[in-house]
Image 1 (cartoon, rainbow, N blue to C red):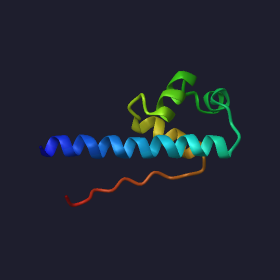
Image 2 (cartoon, rainbow, N blue to C red; image 1 turned 120 degrees about the horizontal axis):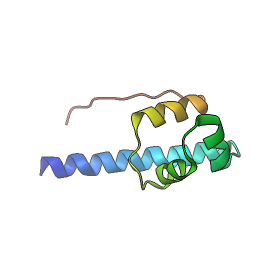
Image 3 (cartoon, rainbow, N blue to C red; image 1 turned 60 degrees about the vertical axis):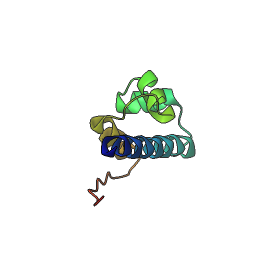
Length: 79
């Protein structure tokens, strides 16, 4: 039961990050191709991250956050 809750929390967090990354790209008026050229992350991966079809790797999150002028904050919370 605890494992199922952790998986749901992880998916919810990933969906939130995916949406934030999509919103940042759109608000900066960038195409997926432009993000690829500037970050080196393949276009298919950027697209998959934004729609939540790929697990978001920390190294990609760091690269994208830096590209968009954001920082990454990871929190450990009590259950």
